[in-house]
Every structure is written in structure tokens, then in C-alpha cells.
Image (cartoon, rainbow, N blue to C red; front, side):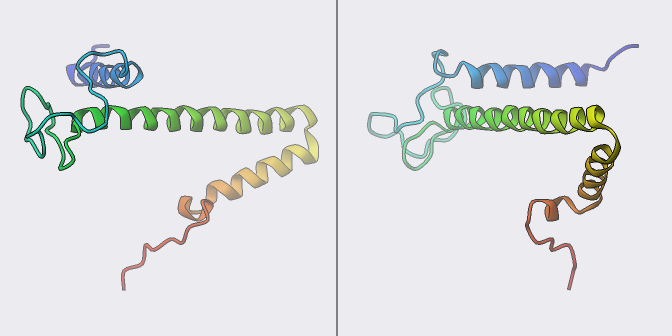
Length: 130
């Protein structure tokens, strides 16, 4: 089948962002997130020197976005690996021991999946309109 250009442009965009986040310290056009030295660089709008502008403290907003993406990527990788480890271990235990272990693991997972996602995290769900 033929894939749309929108899919590939999204893949290229996400790949570029991921590349910049991973290699931010080595790329010459991404500044440190510290205050930029020099007078008159406070609260600039977007331009050639500050692609996304600068904030009131003189920090480059583009650099802060890229370094923020690093944190998001770390959280995503950690979440995926944790899910694989916990889910894989429970699945292996249920398949190996069978019987009551399989029923117990299956029942616990079914109960967790049936509940509201916010309730699984221990937070209160406020989806009622008064």
C-alpha cells in the first residue's frame, strides 16, 4: 500500500526532535539552558538568534524545549521498560505455573483494566459536572 506524506512528515519530525534531544550537548546551535551572557537579550521574540525567543531571564526557549524533551524521552523509555519487565514477569509466571497462579494474575489484571485509569493511580476522578 501507499503511505501518505503526512505519516512520513510526522515520522521525520519526531525523528528530528528525538535526535536533537539525544545529542543536544553536541549540537552547536543548541545553547545551554543557563542565562545567555550579554546585555539586552531579555524577552526577545523569535528570530535568527533565538529561534523560539528568550524568556524574561535571558534563557533560550528553544534550548529549554529540547532539554525538556530529554526528560520526556527518559520517562518514556523508563515507563516502557518497567511495563515490559512487570508485565513480562507476570505473564511468564502465569504461563509457567498455570492453574491458580494463572487465574490469580488474570483476575488481578482484569480488575485493573476494568477500573478508571485515574483511580488506578490513586487519584480522585472528577468527571461529574455539578
